[in-house]
Length: 191
Image (cartoon, rainbow, N blue to C red):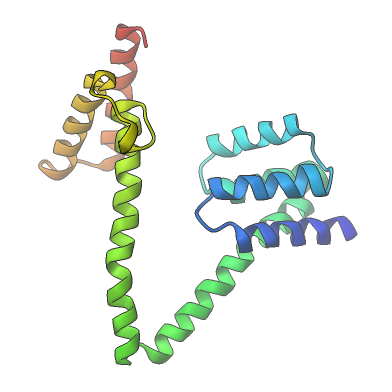
């Protein structure tokens, strides 16, 4: 029972303090399960992270589930997953209550209008980083070199964008199709 509480509390902290997405939570999970509580070795932790990336769903929640199963079986998986998810649920429910109570106030509308451009900027920033990585092999636009431009990736991107925007194709079919074509192209190119 103590181990289940420790799992819950460890992943509650991870869920509460991992601001910035799943990958930002990896150092926190590592600290909890490898360093603070020596439940896993570094090699086992790396294996769990790899499996968490391959399975559908958020990486932090998948990691919590896999660590919980490894430490205490199904009850451990439930405790760790609940601990990881609960902080977000509390925060979202609190924000929903605040919004529903004061949504008609001018100050609330001003806050939301101020947040909209920031959210768009964050999404655009992530999109530009992904584009730089896909087209140039660099994670930031400041370090791109035109000599590293991947023409095959650019053609695949343009074709996928046209299929999605102009011809309104199913996104899953577009991803599957570009994945298959990309596999063939990069095998032919030897990359």
